[in-house]
Length: 115
Length: 110
Image (cartoon, rainbow over all chains, first blue to last red; front, side, top):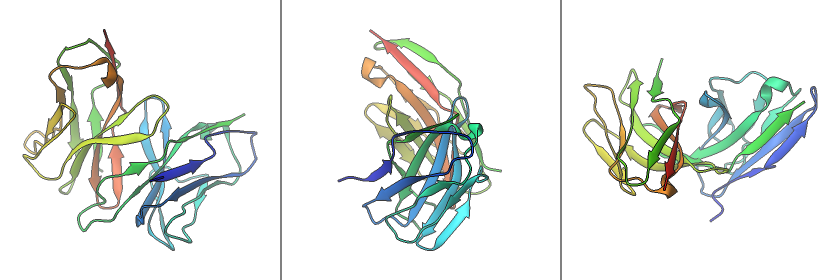
């Protein structure tokens, strides 16, 4: 099983450029989310979605857009990259539960550097 | 708001030593609690979980007990191996969000 697949694994951008980090899952999970991981700060939630057509903001949404047109895909868009967005990004998904989300399944991460 | 505080690292232990990584939480509801592990260059993967008070999660020799009275979920292992070297994250889930601790890096030396 592929699980959660993120592309690209590495990317270097210049300030002001735009790009999209792709995330796809093949587990028919309703819940998908994006995190960024920075040294000393753990993982911080950027955006999440509880199903196709539904998205919501997490802890650090500024500078990022998302959409959820299908159950499988949840792309993260950087409209105008800034050096502060240099980070490792993780996509994670979960089957919805009546009480909370349940276990998160993570992709392998995308390392983004903004110069 | 909801949050997780875990012991800062890095932690360095000799093989077969006892491991404890402390984790405490703040939550308004009744969260589920998790420990995730991240090996170098990889994403996080679930190590163990507990969904209600007094539950004990266990996996690969690791254990953690959900203590509501002390709002804690400390990770323990009786005898660590070199292969346990990784970063460990405590996390809680309430509603549609997960909250992660800052991570504790563990290095086990032979």
